[in-house]
Length: 185
Image (cartoon, rainbow, N blue to C red; front, side):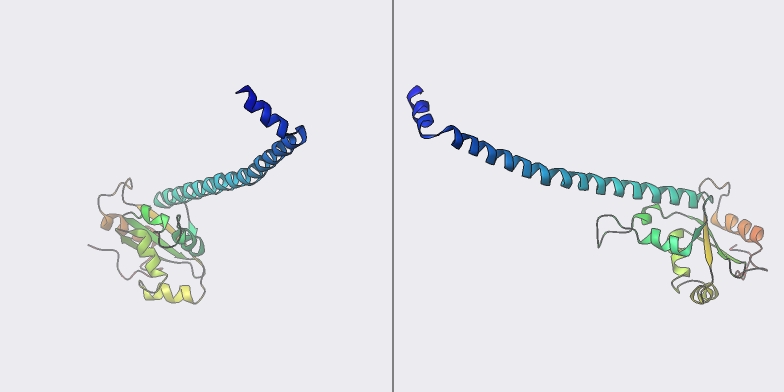
């Protein structure tokens, strides 16, 4: 073993060993230079995604508890948000719930109240031409709208019909709005 090491050291000079160590050091520096920013980017992206998901969950909770009023632009932005790329379902769809929605035409100060088992989908329908025609026409005409939602759960009402009738009466949306009836029976 000693002869082999001695023979190796005879062929390798100190300069050659130093040069090899410099190459190894440069490779390690390069890997660190590439790896650290990639890890920072990955962690940052993940953190951003987690924070965005948290923000949407909070928005949905506040909407469901009728503590948040949202513009149509913000509603559509929230609805479109998907994590995981194209083809994955929108994140907000996980929070679709049974309840009542209150659409307020701020331009004309008129209300429309409705109910649905999947409130997010139903509200979306009104602003994409698959719901109340008058609401859609005023939206397409450029009127400014806000959206409020109330979940049936924890509302104090037993049925969607009761909750809807109460909100229609409270907002007077038959006389001063788009509703044609005082709610379902």
